[in-house]
Length: 192
Ligand code: ATP
Image (cartoon, rainbow, N blue to C red; front, side, top):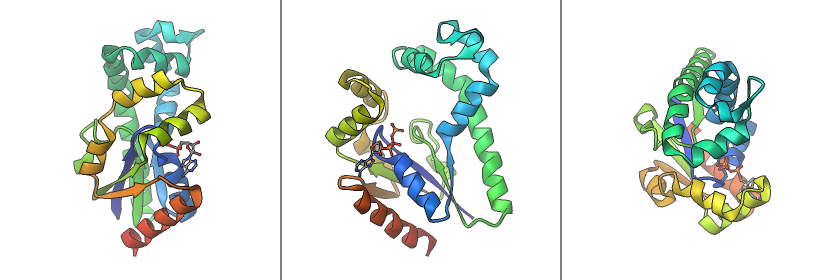
């Protein structure tokens, strides 16, 4: 089985690429999904560490997101709680796919390079798009302000560095149909 990492900067189109790969029959494991699961499973630990992001024992993910994006030390504390959980769940699901005989498993990890994970994969696929496009897409989708987008983008490794470290790059600088064609071409190259 080939294990491949999928990453890219905010709003580059990672989720859209992941969706397309799933439609092609690839097993794609989503770190954000396991982080959401982890926020539920570990809610008492999180609420103890970040009482200001909780109400009635429940984690308010938007409040938690705002808190950690404005406070690097808080972010590191949250990551220390969540990352081992996410990693363990993704390993479990990867193992299940291996046992089921899947030939290709993709792990979608937004902070793959920042977490120093590239050596865990046979290769890393980076989705990239011009920053102005990423900004417009994210602002349209999530209602994040321009300043919030820029703060989040700056808190990550620069896109050009992700592209430099990539095994493969898919440029998402055109319409969705073009993106789908590029994903299919990549899939044929890797699976073929
Ligand atoms: P994030 O880092 O915020 O999770 P992401 O990298 O997963 O983002 P997507 O969610 O796939 O990015 O894409 C961001 C937004 O841009 C989505 O609303 C998506 O539908 C839209 N989008 C992605 N690619 C294109 C494209 N080629 N043309 C038009 N819209 C696009």
